[in-house]
Image (cartoon, rainbow, N blue to C red; front, side, top):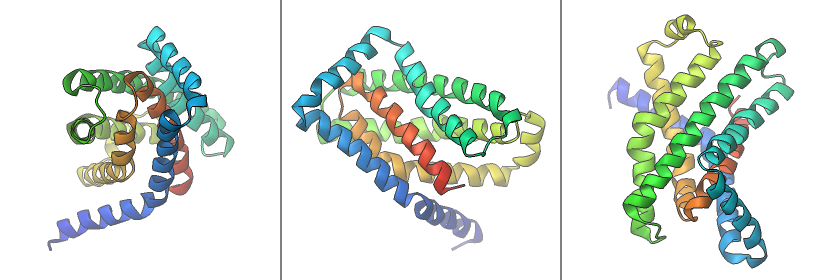
Length: 222
């Protein structure tokens, strides 16, 4: 095996090692919510209320909920734990809110399009196709590159000059592989469960899972 292939393999192994525990916890949380929807009738009114709110307030529900759960809450936890200094707090908050608002709108559009393309069935073929599109081209060509760029930019306090200085091509390649491998380990089963929910409940479940995932990785991978 060549040196470059050994390096890629080492990144994959490290990604699995770092994310195996959060993967199990996150996937268990998504599974509990999915099971609660189908197996606990007393909770159905709660799910129906969230579904009605989502349908009445689109597209703002997706934008605001993802911004809140993946942007504000992880930022607040980071600030409380001293991982963000007070002077850097507001710029980081604004950046997180705007980035995750954009992600929420894009992911909501993806879920809607996939429902139109493949239908709303919960059979294996439908869920497999949606998961393949989500974790294949969508992640490879959009989600992972934008995540790498945004968080790399944020780490340099939103300085493009510092970003370009820090992110040489080998650094970008290593970060890309690390993010993508971690994403697949954690998200492939979770995304399949998200697509098993009705369309109006997919973004709410996504928002809860991405919040939990962001906070969990912040502590496990600091």
